[in-house]
Image (cartoon, rainbow, N blue to C red):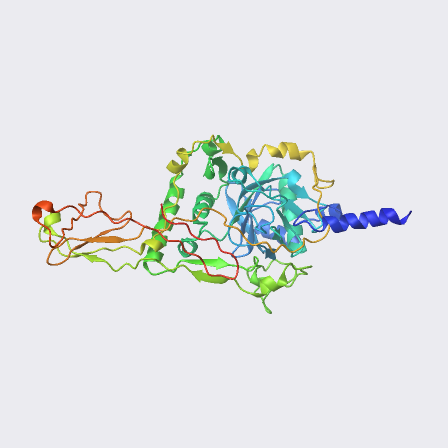
Length: 504
């Protein structure tokens, strides 16, 4: 009879270990870990940057670069970078989490309150990202218990080393002790640079990523935490008006200037021939710091150990192969040359031939969504992710104050998550492909070509008419307009890749 409780307990542990990235909170030493002080080297680093341990923080994560940044707000109200940590493991592909079990680490803006900090984590220490937020729910996305934690194992989480999560946890704890109600966690597929936007301009997730870039632009231009809301099925970012629920918040001139500068740089990179590509991972990645035999420690010089203990690494066979870069070829080449026909240009007789200077339609970058587009959304605005305005913080505040159990601990495994080999589904509506270029010839001696390209012909351009060679003048009829078509393309990769949808 005495064996039954032991068997029951062991059976419970085995059953719970089948979950993915869920925290059972069985660690008896958790509360002691959560009370560890900030390392003295980091405290000295704060002092050198005129920061104090209790200043508010903000955290940013980048999948492709496998880096996590901790920022601190100074007395002037602006954030400055404190430290960058290498991410030991993230799973899935570049792109948002869509459904339970897809192994995707989330992308978006999430407020982290005291109640989301878990001092009793099975993965040393952790905090829950709060996925799904209102934006995720508005887009029908599902999943739960997506965390930032220790132990180099991920099934939809951001896995740091135990040493790294202990330091991040201590920094967050002191910020809460200083009065911060919640800190903002920003998760991106990659750094929102013009180079990355040009490179991934034809990825099916580019529309969602450009929406995320609006928030990134706000933070990078002003070094202030963006207030975040949801209008319809997209994020909106801004200051107090965004916090009040405006679907068309005012955009600061510095943010506008940064956005316009990036758009110009993207166009220049495309014009210079930057290839449109996608990255396909076997299952996520990790920072090279953990793979190189002699890693450079310049970026992570504050690490206490040059080679920290990683613990169990999830799916090491998937990490052994680098991501596959797939080039997305344009459908139409930019080789058209047209002469101005005096018959169709009354104002400019005798004009010289003009080259149609445009990039191939498939490589034209779509403009970053504007606030005006958000104003057309029929749904009522929902303010969701401004850290200081997180209404759930008050409900969570009394539940988990670092020393006790979480307010509503999830029933989850105490062991590492089992490998989930489910294929990654299409993540978001595909970025529209350009329309096929169709040329209609006017029967002149020089066969003048008038090319119709989306967004490039003047609104007042006249349509060319073609006449059958053997028809009488009285019976001649305008040629019918050729239908515009789009084609599907599929990335060729070892894993399942979302296909691009035809242009509307």
